[in-house]
Image (cartoon, rainbow, N blue to C red; front, side, top):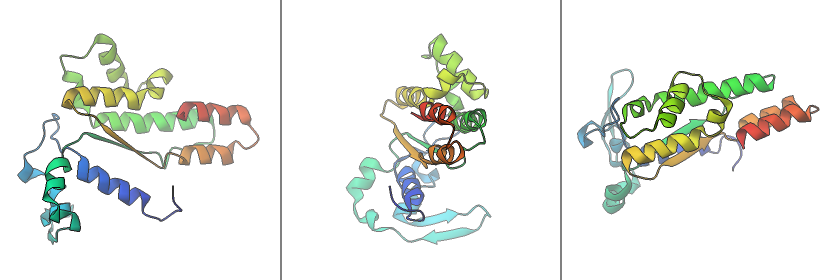
Length: 190
């Protein structure tokens, strides 16, 4: 918890890129030579979004090869940013959160093909992938997704939530006199 423009989001993004297993669309880990995060820390050539190639210098962490070998690109990571989850009423805030969660689930759509899913898990996953989670699904969405990802990779999952306080701060300002609506938003995010 630091002031605005302190680099919190940048730090969280760097941590996610350091830890995250890079995968293809089927959830299979990419071979090391196809990983784009690794050169960000160890140096090397990267291709920018415009197609231009750029040579990066290694960061200081590159001198700690043991740390790199142990942690870089080895963990499943869920990243969720709540900065723009806002609205003029509870329903709009809930809809905005549903949109964020469903978009997050899209990144892990390969999970729906896993033979170990129970029928209930499959149904809940399908609702989230189709953009129609129930309020119960929504409230348990991060926990549920992390359990599925953990089972898939057989590793614990890092969950990084950026701007977690933004929806609550927005609701506090918007519903200052309406404690019922504000309490509903608090319950949703708790």
